Image 1 (cartoon, rainbow, N blue to C red):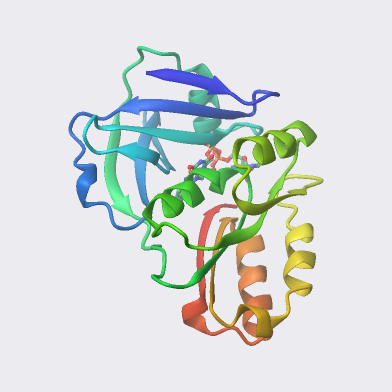
Image 2: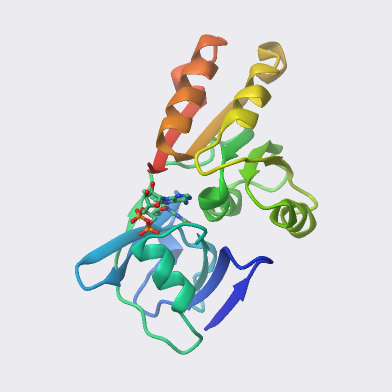
Amino acid sequence: MAVRAWEPGSIRELDLHLPDCDMSRWTSAQHIKCKVGALSYRDYTPSGWDAETHTCTLLIHTAHQGAGSRWAQLLQPGDTISYRGPGSSHQQPAAGRQICFLGDETTIGHFLALQQLTKPGTAIGGAIVLGEAHHRQEFQDYFPGWGVQALHKNAQGDYRELDNWVDALVPQEHADTVFYLAGYVPGVLRLRKQLRRKGFTGSQVQAQGFWD
Ligand SMILES: Cc1cc2nc3c(=O)[nH]c(=O)nc-3n(C[C@H](O)[C@H](O)[C@H](O)COP(=O)(O)OP(=O)(O)OC[C@H]3O[C@@H](n4cnc5c(N)ncnc54)[C@H](O)[C@@H]3O)c2cc1C
């Protein structure tokens, strides 16, 4: 239905109309497998969905060379897409707990989906690494009420700022927090280990790798 690009254009927001999709039953973050080439599918996360109108938005990071990235860069309003799914990512917000998101550009849609499923008043914090200075600015402007910080990333898969952020956490202040990790697989695995070493329990750390 519509395509918006962040400035510079390496994050694209795609508004989709998915008439066959029953979104009223979504109780966890979902992903759809979009057909991005003759035999290629890539996973993307619907966020900001409206079950009545069957619409939702994908946020796709396109700063690298890949079939999915190229597909997302070429899409225009009015195009038809093919997809399989949706399927559940198995991450859902824990009721009555504080929420902490840790990820990169590919996870913004996923975290917005989890936010949509939280009860009003849920405390949300965390940090996201973004490669472009202007994207960090846009992130803070678009989501002013979010307690999620935009941190610097030097290169693809650079999660060092997130490592430092987690290092600085005081476990006693987060006894009631559930951490949602997503994005670059080696970065996610490292953050999970770091959080477990700090004493957080397995049920407090929900991890999902998106790309490697
Ligand atoms: C459940 C799930 C949900 C997902 N939701 C989203 C989403 O909402 N938005 C989104 O953008 N992605 C999302 N992803 C990730 C997306 O499916 C992958 O990033 C995808 O594989 C990239 O596809 P591609 O064809 O562009 O690159 P590929 O062909 O997979 O990779 C080509 C090259 O680019 C590198 N690369 C891949 N992705 C990135 C990246 N993001 N940054 C830098 N280098 C990269 C690879 O290491 C490789 O060298 C999700 C993945 C999963 C599993």
